[in-house]
Amino acid sequence: MSFAPFDWIDDEARRRADAGLVRTLRPRPAEPELLDLASNDYLGLTRHPEVTAAAAEAAYRWGAGATGSRLVTGSTALHADLERELAEFCGFEAALVLSSGYAANLAALTALTGRGSLIVSDAGNHASIVDGCRLSRAETAVVPHADPEAVARELHAHCGRALTVTDSVFSVDGDAAPLRELADVCRTEGAALLVDDAHGLGVLGEGGRGALAAAGLAGGDGIVTTVTLSKSLGSQGGAVLGPARVIDHLVNAARTFIFDTGLAPAATGAALASLRLLRREPARAGRARTVATALYERLTAEGLTAVRPDAAVVSVRAPSPDAAVRWAADCRAAGIAVGCFRPPSVPDGISRLRLTARADLTEVQIAAAVATILRTAPLT
Image (cartoon, rainbow, N blue to C red):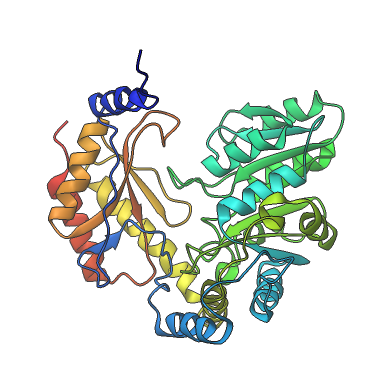
């Protein structure tokens, strides 16, 4: 009797197609053909000439790749400069650069917890946090979204090491976590607080210093944050920031740091150039928030349902997964690229268009985007 080991994949594909959840890759050209409201390039830096020049110079000087893990041959002076300047900018003692924001979350969660410890995780957290919780081997309590009282109950009932983890700005709806309240709860219960500031760095806080700086929590002894270099900084990679002893521990214990090839010099150089540019042009952060508010107010004024943005993500609800896909496709056909979030990417089952508010969008571009989204909106 013959056995085809991957026949089950065909069944999964049919189920996805029936549910309207098929995903496809769409390679983009080198030169933008669409007005971009889909990427995470919040500050419009990924094509900035200073940033691309820094990437090219770093590749020419240091080579195309890091050549090994950070503990072997993968660390360069660029990595050290970026870590020092990133920590200083965000208000933390130290930083550690990894190959992605995903790897940064896995590093922090697995190295700072373990068997016998407790992780309290917000139900709306990013997939990288969910995976980090699973890999940590710690007990994980998933609490209702943005609910400090639920966090307090879980922490109070646990005896031993504990950590609360949350996104600072949630990537689906663009709403912000109640960081001050969570910090108070963690302080009372003796727990650490880990905040993924992927969507806050470059957008929130004075000059884009991040959500923890905005909340007055940056540099706290019991607080660690992760960031990505691939959003506001227009590059690639991630970092963990916190007390120096925490970062030293990660160097010795975080598997996604120890056993992964270091971030490529080009990406490191580009992120460092973006960070320095942001320090020189701090108004970019406020402009991104202004654009987000303009998109929200103009779309909701015309009857669409959207979540008021706390940073640079604007979430507009669609009536169904199929309607969201058609809506996004119609926007694309009209020259506007928008994000499309559907189950299982969204935990509440509600499909959405996800719009990126970029600091470099002009008033003409904002008006054109709003007009296109309204004109192509599903009737039901």
